[in-house]
Length: 471
Image 1: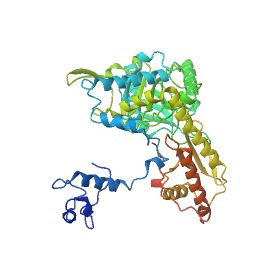
Image 2: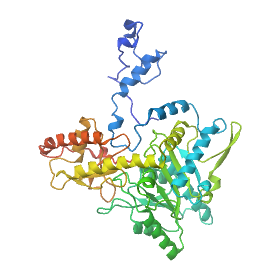
Image 3: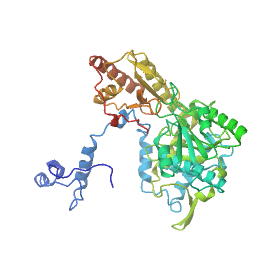
Image 4: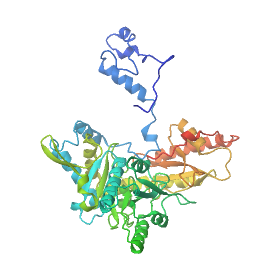
């Protein structure tokens, strides 16, 4: 059942109104056409007319290039778009029919394993996914199954429930994983100006039923890296005291494609022996259009073999570990294209430019008397800010609303426990969001501030739509 509500009953519109010119041969006849909105039409219509219907309605969407809420790639080169068009009819799961697409997937896995300093990139187990959410689900499942196999003498039972430790700032997919697969989510709350996981607090939450600890390399709330190395060190100390050996997963949805190029001395990846798995979003700072993520495990011991399905499908033996089955191969081809196109130096240049834009905008906004920065854009090319303490005429939701009038989509949201009292704005700088566009954003922000200052008080915003923009 769809989650949205349709229009029905008295006053409901019967169908679309039609521009007579949609029927080039007979404009008068076209005026009689009224295709329904909520059921299949009785008959076909001209392809150009059908396309125009959809095109016109989509014009009401926001401009993706001006969407500063999303981490998802909104621009690629025409050559990449053409390549994706050539592969859009290929089903990734049909590895026997499309062996070269399957080969490109494996090459991408090995390239990422090398990028993330796996001890033996050839021994790394990995796969493409539809995005980081699926990749995180797979990593969580591997954690749970490894723990269950190690505790087969006491699980399953009513007295034992596995748990997963994480910060309250994790992406919502981790909460979904815990809900779907009956794992207790143990979250470390935010405290003061700490907006992500605290290593000591994470270790304190671990016990014999902990399947793993999730760290986030680049929080969606403020763009900051969690201290993966410190978390691993705290768990090393825990093992020395108690014997508990707790693995770590790095949710590198964004940061795993930033840190290797801009923060090479930061140790967060497979160089840390406790890191069992890493995921990233190819469609975020991997610079590919939406629809691809990656999940990698250090070695075969980190991914229980019984979770890998070997399917006799369409004449071939196919090992697979994914929640989805059929999906397009276009994004995998585009990821391989991007790896070839840019190489390490190209990625470094693109990501450095995004960080430079973020740092410049953060500095300029921080210089305004009306705002206070929470982050600087110097880790992920992302920064968050809030209204200064003396500002009482408007709030972040007013700023977001007014910027939307100029076409900018800048999310305003409240932080998770225990900082629900703090509402912030967040700006994500991606490839394609240039400093020139940033200057336009600053000009529009400068234009609305005098008007906001004239308000007697914030206009208010219903709590139900004060969303956290987890994507």
